[in-house]
Length: 247
Image 1 (tube, helix red, strand yellow):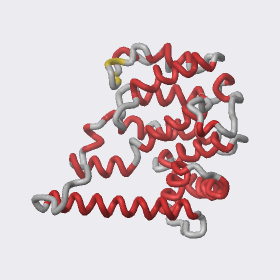
Image 2 (cartoon, rainbow, N blue to C red; image 1 turned 180 degrees about the vertical axis):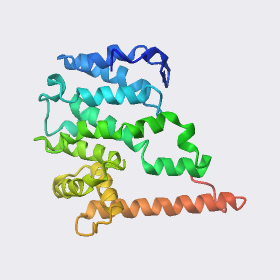
Image 3 (cartoon, rainbow, N blue to C red; image 1 turned 90 degrees about the vertical axis):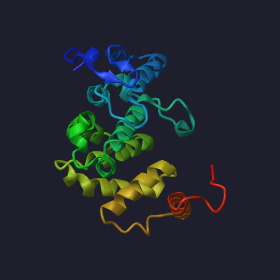
Image 4 (cartoon, rainbow, N blue to C red; image 1 turned 90 degrees about the horizontal axis):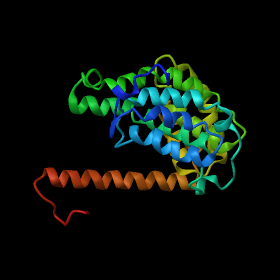
């Protein structure tokens, strides 16, 4: 794909993708310093304001194909990686694939259709192309669900959740639900826990026995924020605030 894609013809957030092949190639450098720079150069141009660009799909497919490369898949994992800016390249690539998949998930499509009509995906060809590529991306991500390192397998799980919304992948739901329960038994990562709890609820599972005190507190805090937001929106629509708005 690196050789067959006309990168210079593809739009990114800051111009064209002409420089992307070099950056994507350097992602597999044995030098972690070079890989760190390549991460910014390869992913930055197609990561902006939760948007999908023309170059996003080929970048995502190249990233997915590189996950098993020895320079990316080998070592570098530590228990304190979550608190460090130096998370392993593999984890960061999985995290990027998952974040991009969430930017093109069914909820995003529904929001777009409410705002722009049912032809939203017909007009947003870049998002539709990413959604069509989900089976290929999932195939690469799926291989890491049983990784020895918890951060790798948990990040892979969170990335896989939005990918299996594709009609050809929904049969993986039960398997991901099992992985989600195992994550909830050991993980303290707020983002990971929120994602898998939301997924289990969406799939019709009772999560009451899986939540811990932190989950309950986070859920209640989120509910309060939503209620406050609804109140602010209502006051604005009604012609003014009874008190100073909270900004």
